[in-house]
Length: 91
Ligand SMILES: [Zn+2]
Image (cartoon, rainbow, N blue to C red; front, side, top):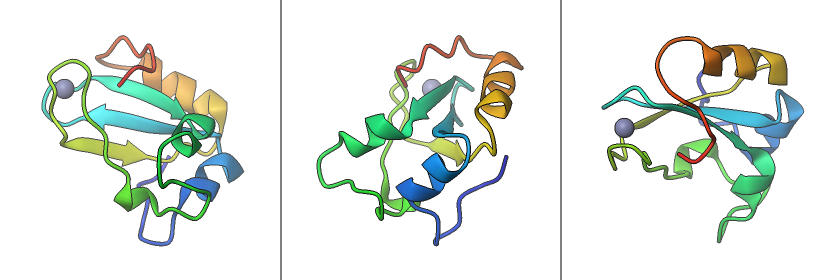
């Protein structure tokens, strides 16, 4: 699990665990977003830097969302289960 740097893009996500971990800094809600959901966004392709993506929390509407890249899907699931958050993927 690591934070994206400026070289990481949507391609980085599917080369690793295939999902991106999101956590709201305001309320702590966690969610996973699969890379295919990222690619469905307008103006997003494989080379879009992760730092350019905007997320909004479904719980508290904050846009202060932390991104983490899991190395495997299993790591992503374990992260989701630990601590706060329901994690239905709807962040
Ligand atoms: Zn929130």
